[in-house]
Amino acid sequence: MRLCFVDESCNGDFSGFGAIVADALQTAQLTRRMNEIVAELDEGYGIGRATEVHAYLMFHGKEQWSEVPVRVRIRAFEQVIDAVCSAGVDVLLRAVHCERLRERQSRSRYREHHSPDQVAFQHLLQRIDEIALRDRTHALVIADERTDRERHRDRFAVYQLHGTPGSYLSTRLDRLLDTVHFAPSHHSRMLQIADVVAFVWRRAETVVETDARQARTMSRLIEQIRSRAYKPGIWP
Image (cartoon, rainbow, N blue to C red):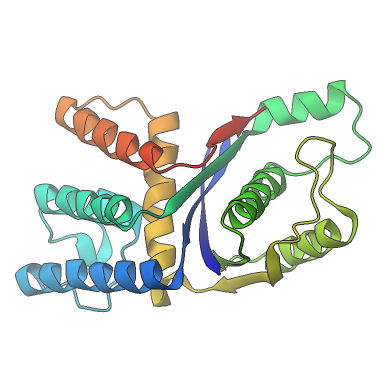
């Protein structure tokens, strides 16, 4: 069985999700490595061993990360992405251009106008289903907690009963088990990894780095992430 850990990252016209698809052994391996990374930071800077690896806070040096030097925070990003690549997991990156989606739905006179996050999440679920089929197994989806989780659960149930909208990649998500489960990211190292992956991808797609060293680092990180990505894309 595969476990898929999902987190969202949005900025302006970009609405997207990053996900890690792992088996039980890979999940245990990555959780252990994340705990080691945080323990090393705690020894050096006293951030606390239970501190969440939250990409935005870590990148900008806020809250528990405020006393950690920039070079060390950059190294933490590198360690997380290195761990993802070493574990051999699948990475999923699916997003929507919000304005282009609205224009397409209006131009084509869609009967229903779906929100960007709903469309992006649907595309993500379709790829998880493909991976499970490829690996001849099933998958359970675990996402970071959000206020509209019931809406996503309801849509998931509709997809499994009637199929995903549209003819392209239409599926009833037969390989996905139960429902979408939502969990607090501060209790899940795997959701924290998904957060880091989603943050780096979103930033690479939406921000022009003005600092040369930062640009090189972000370029290296996103190339590593893309090397593990299964059919990444931004629609339309």
